[in-house]
Image (cartoon, rainbow, N blue to C red; front, side, top):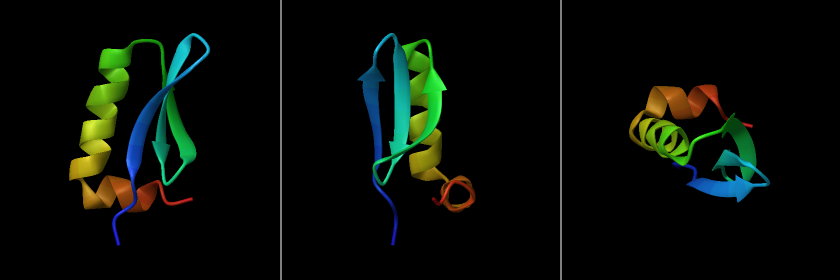
Amino acid sequence: MAGKVHVKADGIAWQVLLDGHPVANFDLVGEALDYAAMVESSPRERSALKV
């Protein structure tokens, strides 16, 4: 089953979370959203990030 991908503000950084666990941090929200979209659409990337 696919995990849930979210982006949230964490202080001055933006975190990408997979199933509630942080997997990446970005300074710019656009970069975080791009990465989240890539993780959301790529089963291979998602499985590599499983926590």
